[in-house]
Amino acid sequence: LDLRSEDLQTLSELGAGNGGTVSRVMHLPTKSIMARKVIHIDAQPAVRKQILRELQIMHDCNHPNIVSFYGAFLHESEISYCMEIMDVGSLDGICAKNGAFPMDVIGLITVSVLKGLNYLYTNHKIVHRDLKPSNILINSAGLVKICDFGVSGQLVNSIANTFVGTSNYMSPERIRGWNYGVQSDVWSLGITLMELALGRFPLDAECKSLTILELLQHIVNEPLPTLPRRDFPEDFCNFVDICLTKSVDQRPSPDNLAQHPYYLRAEREKVDMEHWVSHLVK
Ligand code: ATP
Ligand code: MG
Image 1 (cartoon, rainbow, N blue to C red):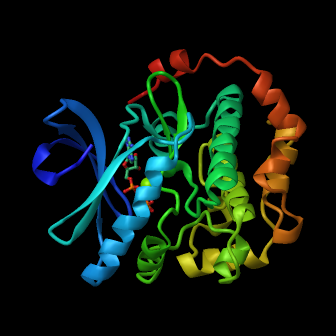
Image 2 (image 1 turned 180 degrees about the vertical axis):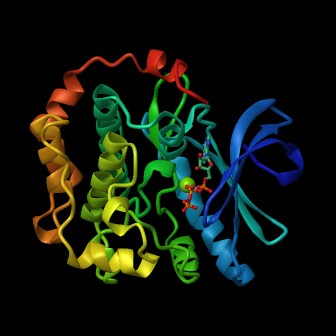
């Protein structure tokens, strides 16, 4: 499929993040609906072309828990890529309108995200780098998939250079500017799961009045909150706690987590996602 800007008709806006904006579009020649992400980057044309080349790796990333990639192109000095539309949207939006997630749904999300991360890492040596609720998407079939992973080193650099690349879901080693590995994605998963369970960003209570720099400092230096044991099952609380191990060397890898009792229990559980999804406040 050779995607061109002229062939895409914008139907609606889906949202905007630090890196760009996403809209629902129709690919006119095939009449198919896609999500198009447009990224503005102040970079030399050569750098943009390199990003475009690097994004092509996404064509090889095929897995039930990875959002499908249709293609990338340059248009008027902006980079666009088109992907599978996930019609229920991202976890941040669902959480904002519906509050905390039910435990069985969190279990399915945990298993889906870890399968996606494990696939990217074992098959393509790709570390996600930006795992958070807005990059975990659900469709009306009840499937959970991850998107916006760091396939393009040059894109990651270009966004990082603008500082907006920082996020509340960054691990202590990332904040310190140390090496980034799969374990850093595990940290982000831990914060994300805690947020879904509580229905709010877990560090907000004690960090309400902090600036972003103070929040990042807090993540590096202060003990993290743990989930209240009376409200959540012990295996889940333990799973989240070990994801939030401050020292990278002691933090589990996604592979290790797939052996955890909570993961094994969640993997066995049957969850009627289609039903849950159909009753959400949109
Ligand atoms: P950041 O730029 O920091 O990654 P973000 O993930 O919120 O933040 P975008 O990646 O630009 O920003 O996405 C904006 C919104 O578009 C997301 O919050 C999500 O709800 C929606 N979105 C992104 N991709 C898709 C998709 N494939 N299908 C449906 N909605 C999507
Ligand atoms: Mg995103």
